[in-house]
Length: 201
Image 1 (cartoon, helix red, strand yellow):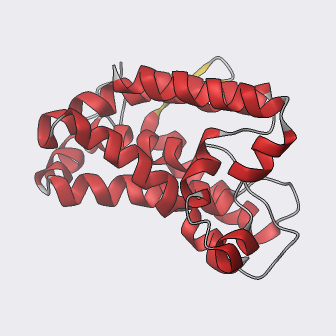
Image 2 (cartoon, one colour):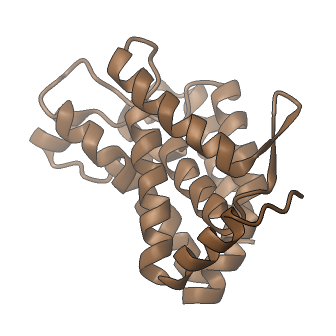
């Protein structure tokens, strides 16, 4: 239920911001506004707006498929509100390295839920590493996709220039794994056991 609510709120806010430049400008991550005007809420609000429908749909479809399972697992550990706090904190944590890097760059802006969605995806991978993820209609084991995702994010972050915040993707992924391990350290053992005993599905 919380996953669906997060999707609904994100779609609504993003849709409103598409046609309202002033709303977009107020919610987007713009480091000088945080550094000079103390608008710390931008560290969170940027995760509820997107550049276009394609950007929005990709993030929300990913959240829909993997968020529901992550919500169940996290909810069983720390209660249903725990998943909500996990997702919201992931938006903030995932963007912090980017914010610190561009803290004094008035030309830099960032938006989108990708960092938090990456956290959800990797929380899912930690629990079900061999589940099949369909990438361009091809079934790929979650753990294989995760390894490729991390490598690609590191490489593209170093390359730069494609208007995608790969650093936030990577930070979100790391946070998703660390959060799960902190909440339930035994998940590490379960992950390793499932990793060496593949079961596709």
